[in-house]
Length: 348
Image 1 (cartoon, rainbow, N blue to C red):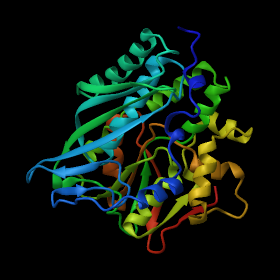
Image 2: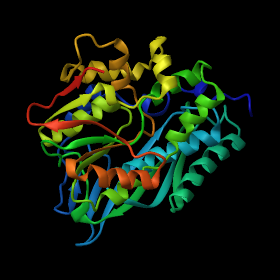
Image 3: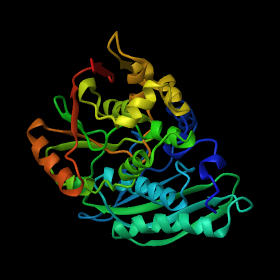
Image 4: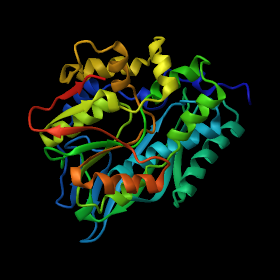
Protein backbone atom coordinates (compact mmCIF):
# COMPACT_ATOMS: atom_id res chain seq x y z
CA UNK A 1 0.00 0.00 0.00
CA UNK A 2 2.89 2.37 0.67
CA UNK A 3 3.83 2.17 -3.03
CA UNK A 4 0.51 3.65 -4.17
CA UNK A 5 0.79 7.30 -5.25
CA UNK A 6 -2.65 8.85 -5.00
CA UNK A 7 -1.57 11.96 -6.91
CA UNK A 8 -0.54 9.75 -9.82
CA UNK A 9 -4.14 8.53 -10.18
CA UNK A 10 -5.58 12.00 -10.84
CA UNK A 11 -5.12 14.60 -13.58
CA UNK A 12 -5.12 17.43 -11.01
CA UNK A 13 -5.19 17.79 -7.27
CA UNK A 14 -7.01 19.56 -4.46
CA UNK A 15 -8.66 22.87 -5.26
CA UNK A 16 -6.44 23.09 -8.32
CA UNK A 17 -8.86 20.76 -10.10
CA UNK A 18 -11.72 23.25 -9.84
CA UNK A 19 -13.30 24.37 -13.10
CA UNK A 20 -11.86 27.75 -14.11
CA UNK A 21 -13.82 30.85 -13.03
CA UNK A 22 -14.57 31.89 -16.64
CA UNK A 23 -15.86 28.48 -17.69
CA UNK A 24 -17.85 28.07 -14.50
CA UNK A 25 -19.49 31.44 -15.08
CA UNK A 26 -20.51 30.41 -18.59
CA UNK A 27 -21.94 27.13 -17.32
CA UNK A 28 -23.97 28.77 -14.57
CA UNK A 29 -25.29 31.41 -16.98
CA UNK A 30 -27.09 28.63 -18.85
CA UNK A 31 -29.02 27.53 -15.76
CA UNK A 32 -32.72 28.41 -15.80
CA UNK A 33 -33.92 30.55 -12.89
CA UNK A 34 -35.00 28.49 -9.91
CA UNK A 35 -37.13 29.01 -6.85
CA UNK A 36 -35.98 31.72 -4.46
CA UNK A 37 -38.03 31.35 -1.27
CA UNK A 38 -37.98 34.21 1.21
CA UNK A 39 -36.10 32.09 3.75
CA UNK A 40 -33.21 31.39 1.34
CA UNK A 41 -30.86 34.05 2.69
CA UNK A 42 -27.85 33.12 0.54
CA UNK A 43 -28.05 31.28 -2.77
CA UNK A 44 -26.16 31.51 -6.05
CA UNK A 45 -26.26 35.31 -6.42
CA UNK A 46 -22.64 36.18 -5.60
CA UNK A 47 -20.71 32.90 -5.59
CA UNK A 48 -20.69 32.62 -1.81
CA UNK A 49 -19.09 29.67 -0.05
CA UNK A 50 -22.35 28.02 1.06
CA UNK A 51 -26.12 28.32 0.92
CA UNK A 52 -27.96 29.67 3.96
CA UNK A 53 -31.62 28.90 4.73
CA UNK A 54 -33.48 30.52 7.64
CA UNK A 55 -35.26 28.09 9.98
CA UNK A 56 -36.53 30.67 12.48
CA UNK A 57 -35.58 34.05 13.92
CA UNK A 58 -32.49 32.66 15.68
CA UNK A 59 -31.31 29.80 13.46
CA UNK A 60 -30.35 29.31 9.84
CA UNK A 61 -28.86 26.23 8.18
CA UNK A 62 -25.55 26.63 6.34
CA UNK A 63 -25.21 23.96 3.63
CA UNK A 64 -22.26 23.19 1.37
CA UNK A 65 -20.46 20.41 -0.45
CA UNK A 66 -16.79 20.30 -1.40
CA UNK A 67 -14.67 17.47 -2.75
CA UNK A 68 -11.61 16.97 -4.94
CA UNK A 69 -8.92 14.62 -6.21
CA UNK A 70 -5.75 13.88 -4.17
CA UNK A 71 -3.36 16.71 -3.38
CA UNK A 72 -0.97 14.40 -1.46
CA UNK A 73 -0.12 10.71 -1.63
CA UNK A 74 -0.74 9.68 1.97
CA UNK A 75 -4.38 8.46 2.18
CA UNK A 76 -4.97 9.61 5.77
CA UNK A 77 -3.54 13.05 5.03
CA UNK A 78 -5.66 13.34 1.87
CA UNK A 79 -8.79 12.66 3.91
CA UNK A 80 -7.81 15.21 6.54
CA UNK A 81 -7.09 17.95 4.00
CA UNK A 82 -10.31 17.36 2.04
CA UNK A 83 -12.46 17.40 5.17
CA UNK A 84 -10.80 20.55 6.55
CA UNK A 85 -11.36 22.26 3.21
CA UNK A 86 -15.05 21.31 3.11
CA UNK A 87 -15.78 22.52 6.64
CA UNK A 88 -14.12 25.83 5.80
CA UNK A 89 -17.12 26.81 3.69
CA UNK A 90 -19.36 26.67 6.78
CA UNK A 91 -16.90 28.69 8.87
CA UNK A 92 -16.55 31.27 6.07
CA UNK A 93 -20.27 32.06 6.36
CA UNK A 94 -19.93 32.56 10.11
CA UNK A 95 -21.47 29.16 10.80
CA UNK A 96 -20.72 26.43 13.31
CA UNK A 97 -20.63 22.94 11.71
CA UNK A 98 -23.10 20.40 13.12
CA UNK A 99 -22.68 17.32 10.89
CA UNK A 100 -21.16 16.05 7.67
CA UNK A 101 -21.86 13.45 5.00
CA UNK A 102 -18.98 11.80 3.13
CA UNK A 103 -18.73 12.19 -0.65
CA UNK A 104 -16.65 9.27 -1.97
CA UNK A 105 -15.62 8.30 -5.49
CA UNK A 106 -12.87 5.69 -5.80
CA UNK A 107 -11.28 3.60 -8.59
CA UNK A 108 -12.01 0.25 -6.96
CA UNK A 109 -9.79 -1.60 -9.43
CA UNK A 110 -6.76 0.55 -8.47
CA UNK A 111 -7.10 1.12 -4.73
CA UNK A 112 -7.44 -1.64 -2.11
CA UNK A 113 -10.14 -1.21 0.54
CA UNK A 114 -7.48 -0.56 3.20
CA UNK A 115 -6.29 2.58 1.39
CA UNK A 116 -9.82 3.87 0.91
CA UNK A 117 -10.50 3.19 4.57
CA UNK A 118 -7.52 5.34 5.54
CA UNK A 119 -8.88 8.23 3.45
CA UNK A 120 -12.24 7.99 5.22
CA UNK A 121 -10.53 7.73 8.61
CA UNK A 122 -8.57 10.89 7.89
CA UNK A 123 -11.73 12.81 7.09
CA UNK A 124 -13.50 11.43 10.14
CA UNK A 125 -10.61 12.50 12.39
CA UNK A 126 -10.99 16.14 11.28
CA UNK A 127 -14.76 16.04 11.82
CA UNK A 128 -14.17 14.62 15.29
CA UNK A 129 -11.74 17.52 15.88
CA UNK A 130 -14.47 19.95 14.78
CA UNK A 131 -16.89 18.29 17.20
CA UNK A 132 -19.24 16.83 14.58
CA UNK A 133 -20.17 13.36 13.31
CA UNK A 134 -19.84 11.94 9.82
CA UNK A 135 -23.46 10.88 9.76
CA UNK A 136 -23.57 9.10 6.38
CA UNK A 137 -22.66 9.73 2.77
CA UNK A 138 -22.55 8.26 -0.72
CA UNK A 139 -19.90 6.34 -2.67
CA UNK A 140 -19.38 5.45 -6.34
CA UNK A 141 -16.78 3.63 -8.45
CA UNK A 142 -14.97 6.16 -10.66
CA UNK A 143 -11.68 6.46 -12.58
CA UNK A 144 -9.98 8.98 -10.24
CA UNK A 145 -10.05 9.16 -6.42
CA UNK A 146 -12.46 11.80 -5.13
CA UNK A 147 -13.20 12.59 -1.50
CA UNK A 148 -14.89 15.39 0.40
CA UNK A 149 -17.91 16.27 2.49
CA UNK A 150 -21.39 17.66 2.33
CA UNK A 151 -21.40 19.79 5.49
CA UNK A 152 -24.17 21.44 7.48
CA UNK A 153 -23.86 24.18 10.06
CA UNK A 154 -25.92 26.64 12.06
CA UNK A 155 -25.72 30.43 12.23
CA UNK A 156 -27.87 33.24 13.59
CA UNK A 157 -29.63 34.75 10.53
CA UNK A 158 -28.62 38.22 11.70
CA UNK A 159 -24.95 37.22 11.81
CA UNK A 160 -24.45 35.54 8.43
CA UNK A 161 -21.25 36.69 6.74
CA UNK A 162 -21.30 36.83 2.94
CA UNK A 163 -18.93 38.30 0.35
CA UNK A 164 -21.37 41.14 -0.39
CA UNK A 165 -21.21 43.25 2.77
CA UNK A 166 -17.79 44.88 2.52
CA UNK A 167 -17.50 48.66 2.90
CA UNK A 168 -15.07 51.28 1.59
CA UNK A 169 -12.06 51.56 3.87
CA UNK A 170 -12.39 48.03 5.25
CA UNK A 171 -9.11 46.31 6.08
CA UNK A 172 -8.41 42.94 4.45
CA UNK A 173 -7.09 40.21 6.75
CA UNK A 174 -5.82 36.85 5.47
CA UNK A 175 -5.48 34.03 8.03
CA UNK A 176 -3.21 31.58 6.16
CA UNK A 177 -0.16 32.17 3.93
CA UNK A 178 -0.19 31.62 0.17
CA UNK A 179 1.61 28.94 -1.81
CA UNK A 180 -0.25 25.68 -1.16
CA UNK A 181 -0.90 25.06 -4.87
CA UNK A 182 2.80 25.45 -5.61
CA UNK A 183 3.66 23.05 -2.79
CA UNK A 184 1.16 20.51 -4.17
CA UNK A 185 2.96 20.71 -7.51
CA UNK A 186 6.17 20.11 -5.57
CA UNK A 187 4.65 16.99 -4.01
CA UNK A 188 3.98 15.52 -7.44
CA UNK A 189 7.55 16.24 -8.53
CA UNK A 190 9.16 14.95 -5.34
CA UNK A 191 10.55 18.39 -4.51
CA UNK A 192 9.40 18.75 -0.87
CA UNK A 193 11.52 17.81 2.13
CA UNK A 194 9.81 16.19 5.15
CA UNK A 195 9.83 19.64 6.82
CA UNK A 196 8.23 21.25 3.73
CA UNK A 197 5.54 18.58 3.67
CA UNK A 198 4.88 19.02 7.39
CA UNK A 199 4.35 22.76 6.89
CA UNK A 200 1.98 22.13 3.99
CA UNK A 201 0.05 19.64 6.12
CA UNK A 202 -0.08 22.07 9.04
CA UNK A 203 -1.80 24.79 7.03
CA UNK A 204 -4.12 22.54 5.01
CA UNK A 205 -5.46 20.73 8.10
CA UNK A 206 -5.87 23.87 10.22
CA UNK A 207 -9.61 24.39 10.72
CA UNK A 208 -10.85 27.94 10.08
CA UNK A 209 -12.70 27.92 13.41
CA UNK A 210 -12.30 31.68 13.76
CA UNK A 211 -15.11 32.17 11.23
CA UNK A 212 -17.77 30.93 13.66
CA UNK A 213 -16.66 33.44 16.29
CA UNK A 214 -16.22 36.32 13.86
CA UNK A 215 -19.90 36.14 12.90
CA UNK A 216 -20.86 38.05 16.05
CA UNK A 217 -18.26 40.83 15.60
CA UNK A 218 -20.12 43.90 14.27
CA UNK A 219 -17.00 45.28 12.59
CA UNK A 220 -16.64 42.21 10.35
CA UNK A 221 -18.54 43.10 7.17
CA UNK A 222 -17.67 40.32 4.71
CA UNK A 223 -15.85 37.01 4.67
CA UNK A 224 -14.86 34.22 2.32
CA UNK A 225 -12.21 31.52 2.20
CA UNK A 226 -9.36 31.51 -0.30
CA UNK A 227 -9.37 28.26 -2.27
CA UNK A 228 -9.20 27.24 -5.92
CA UNK A 229 -9.46 30.68 -7.54
CA UNK A 230 -6.51 32.05 -5.57
CA UNK A 231 -6.34 35.20 -3.45
CA UNK A 232 -6.98 37.52 -6.41
CA UNK A 233 -9.98 35.53 -7.62
CA UNK A 234 -11.73 35.31 -4.28
CA UNK A 235 -10.97 38.95 -3.50
CA UNK A 236 -12.54 39.88 -6.83
CA UNK A 237 -15.68 38.00 -5.74
CA UNK A 238 -15.87 40.28 -2.69
CA UNK A 239 -15.26 43.33 -4.89
CA UNK A 240 -17.96 42.42 -7.39
CA UNK A 241 -20.52 41.43 -4.78
CA UNK A 242 -19.81 44.55 -2.67
CA UNK A 243 -19.36 46.87 -5.68
CA UNK A 244 -15.94 48.02 -4.54
CA UNK A 245 -12.32 47.96 -5.58
CA UNK A 246 -9.40 46.57 -3.60
CA UNK A 247 -5.81 47.54 -2.98
CA UNK A 248 -3.33 44.83 -1.99
CA UNK A 249 0.07 45.56 -0.45
CA UNK A 250 2.37 43.13 -2.23
CA UNK A 251 5.05 43.55 0.43
CA UNK A 252 2.68 42.31 3.15
CA UNK A 253 1.48 39.16 1.41
CA UNK A 254 2.36 36.12 3.54
CA UNK A 255 4.12 33.51 1.37
CA UNK A 256 5.28 30.08 2.47
CA UNK A 257 9.06 30.25 1.98
CA UNK A 258 9.41 26.92 0.18
CA UNK A 259 6.62 27.94 -2.18
CA UNK A 260 8.41 31.22 -2.88
CA UNK A 261 11.55 29.29 -3.80
CA UNK A 262 9.68 26.82 -6.00
CA UNK A 263 7.94 29.63 -7.90
CA UNK A 264 11.30 31.31 -8.45
CA UNK A 265 12.51 28.07 -10.05
CA UNK A 266 9.50 27.97 -12.40
CA UNK A 267 7.13 25.65 -10.52
CA UNK A 268 3.43 26.52 -10.88
CA UNK A 269 0.08 24.81 -11.38
CA UNK A 270 -2.04 24.71 -14.51
CA UNK A 271 -4.89 26.11 -12.42
CA UNK A 272 -2.90 29.27 -11.77
CA UNK A 273 -2.63 29.88 -15.51
CA UNK A 274 -6.36 29.21 -15.98
CA UNK A 275 -7.20 31.56 -13.13
CA UNK A 276 -5.16 34.40 -14.65
CA UNK A 277 -6.78 33.84 -18.04
CA UNK A 278 -10.20 34.08 -16.37
CA UNK A 279 -9.78 37.29 -14.38
CA UNK A 280 -6.29 38.72 -14.96
CA UNK A 281 -7.76 41.67 -16.86
CA UNK A 282 -9.26 42.85 -13.55
CA UNK A 283 -5.94 42.71 -11.67
CA UNK A 284 -3.39 45.54 -11.92
CA UNK A 285 0.19 44.57 -11.07
CA UNK A 286 3.12 46.98 -10.59
CA UNK A 287 4.94 47.65 -13.89
CA UNK A 288 8.09 45.89 -12.70
CA UNK A 289 6.33 43.01 -10.95
CA UNK A 290 8.04 39.62 -11.35
CA UNK A 291 6.03 36.81 -12.96
CA UNK A 292 6.09 35.05 -9.59
CA UNK A 293 3.69 37.66 -8.14
CA UNK A 294 0.92 36.79 -10.61
CA UNK A 295 1.56 33.10 -9.97
CA UNK A 296 1.18 33.48 -6.20
CA UNK A 297 -1.91 35.71 -6.45
CA UNK A 298 -3.65 33.11 -8.62
CA UNK A 299 -2.23 30.02 -6.90
CA UNK A 300 -5.10 27.65 -6.00
CA UNK A 301 -5.17 27.35 -2.22
CA UNK A 302 -6.37 23.94 -1.13
CA UNK A 303 -7.89 24.46 2.32
CA UNK A 304 -6.73 28.08 2.37
CA UNK A 305 -7.37 30.75 4.95
CA UNK A 306 -10.22 33.13 5.58
CA UNK A 307 -10.22 36.51 3.82
CA UNK A 308 -11.93 38.97 6.15
CA UNK A 309 -13.12 42.50 5.36
CA UNK A 310 -13.51 44.50 8.55
CA UNK A 311 -13.66 48.03 9.88
CA UNK A 312 -10.10 49.22 10.63
CA UNK A 313 -11.07 49.76 14.28
CA UNK A 314 -11.99 46.05 14.52
CA UNK A 315 -8.64 44.74 13.24
CA UNK A 316 -7.22 44.16 16.73
CA UNK A 317 -10.35 42.29 17.85
CA UNK A 318 -10.39 40.15 14.70
CA UNK A 319 -6.73 39.28 14.99
CA UNK A 320 -7.14 38.41 18.67
CA UNK A 321 -9.88 35.92 17.78
CA UNK A 322 -7.80 34.42 14.96
CA UNK A 323 -4.80 34.15 17.27
CA UNK A 324 -6.92 32.42 19.91
CA UNK A 325 -7.80 29.52 17.60
CA UNK A 326 -4.58 29.13 15.61
CA UNK A 327 -0.87 29.83 15.94
CA UNK A 328 -0.87 33.24 14.25
CA UNK A 329 -3.06 36.33 14.13
CA UNK A 330 -3.36 36.59 10.37
CA UNK A 331 -1.99 39.33 8.14
CA UNK A 332 -3.44 42.68 7.07
CA UNK A 333 -2.83 42.53 3.30
CA UNK A 334 -4.80 45.48 1.93
CA UNK A 335 -8.04 47.42 1.97
CA UNK A 336 -11.27 47.98 0.06
CA UNK A 337 -11.90 51.26 -1.75
CA UNK A 338 -14.61 53.01 -3.72
CA UNK A 339 -14.41 52.27 -7.42
CA UNK A 340 -14.70 49.56 -10.04
CA UNK A 341 -14.35 45.91 -9.09
CA UNK A 342 -10.60 45.63 -9.61
CA UNK A 343 -7.66 44.44 -7.55
CA UNK A 344 -4.74 46.89 -7.62
CA UNK A 345 -1.51 45.41 -6.26
CA UNK A 346 1.05 47.85 -4.88
CA UNK A 347 4.77 47.11 -5.27
CA UNK A 348 6.08 44.16 -3.28
